[in-house]
Image 1 (tube, rainbow, N blue to C red):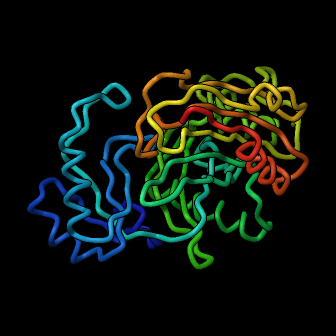
Image 2: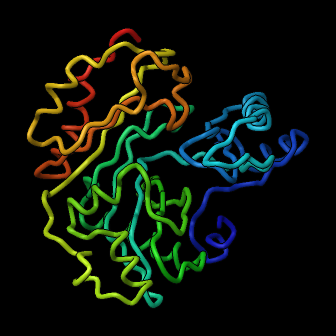
Length: 300
């Protein structure tokens, strides 16, 4: 994926595939610091971290190689990517390809936890952007999709806006996770899974209900964590928040008293989620912050 996009003349981070600790020194010399290390075959931010030295890179790679559990029903390989760290705000461009035509349905803002990890704490659709920037991100994502050869079905393209330039993080021929498809439907009226299924089967997307009226100008999701604690006892203010007319759904993902990773590293650290609507992308961002302010994680 990285090489195909680079060969198409699009900007990507410098990168090296690393399989063994002995490969790290040369890889770090090529990429430089700060860098990001990640497994090539996982998701949900598992084992993704910023590293600022060869020592930190060795520790991160060793943690990947020591992983014995399954992520997304499969074991990790020993291959990792060490890549140039790209500063900037993160977005995703999501859409579909039909008959070779790439259609970006929405650009979504991704809200992340503190580095050196990259835990996703929320998404806002559409992203609070001016039209020119949104068009630039969508155009870049279109060229990325074409470069990797996605010719039909959905795509999920993650990128950062760095010094006003879009730079690819990753792209995949799949639907987005974290309920982004639902956020897109609320804000645009398009049911992306239904549209893709209709295209593949030859059904009429209009007749199959792929298009509906939008229910809001913007939508978002906020994930809550226990702040690095190993468990919690109660979510104070949860019921009051859930009663707000702009809250569409509220889900407890990890029950009180259950064990939680303390490093705030990946999707398994998220204990609750709130889906909401707003009258503008800017108001959606404000409500994302408000949710974090109103709900207190007690006993953490």
